[in-house]
Image (cartoon, rainbow, N blue to C red; front, side, top):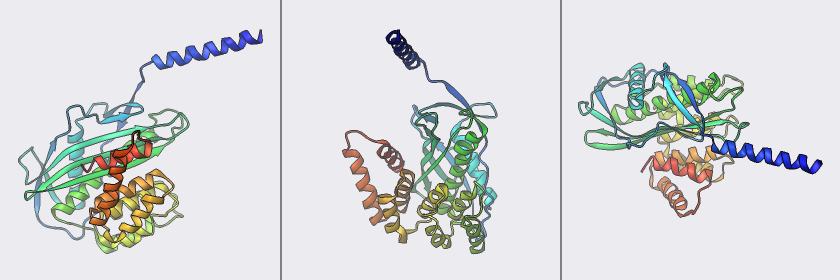
Length: 330
């Protein structure tokens, strides 16, 4: 009798497994919001005005949302044109900071941002692990005949409490990264256009908020990103102190900002993080920062990692994600 019972359990499990394997993965509606503008204001600002054209040069087969789970991303219940959606957010961010910019029709602007990648890749190991997203962008910024590659990569994650598309998930792994992406790309445009920046006093105020470990605000890491988005190099020594912070997103924001601010003095430190950090996300963000620096010394590290990945017969998760980051630059 016991043997028959055990046999029945095995058959039941096999039937369930077969049923699940034959099922099409469900698609979850993900109601995202328009990216929020930062509170940054440029104190050192150019009076030059510019019209920016955004060109969608993504491959026809590109997908805005991809990964382990299927998400149907909508704004106000409607599907969106992703490049137009992000373009409007970037222009709004630049205007809110004090830059004199406007969005121009394709090929009619003073400068052009040619978008080659815009996507959100999700990953989840099991029902008890965080839903992780990698929100990423790459494009060529063309001004005065010069081409500059712009790359942004934001990693966020959160464990769902009840369902995969609850408000906390939407805010943490979709809304916040999309806002950060728009603010990051806006800063990179600024660096190549008019080099507007925040004041030293604003840097000091942000440092006071960002460095306060007693501050339990879960969005404190946003202040660290703003130290980079402010485009003021006086933030660099303060960011260096934050790359060992116990809070993951504070560390990632600090590492990312060192690359954004072209902290060439920190190549050795970032290389050390890339080689020895315990978590992939720290190593991956250090790799991206080194790629952003684009010095002879940092390029050696970046090129060596690209060649190492190319030599692998099979990619583990860290190699796959490092390749995803480096592919944005190529």
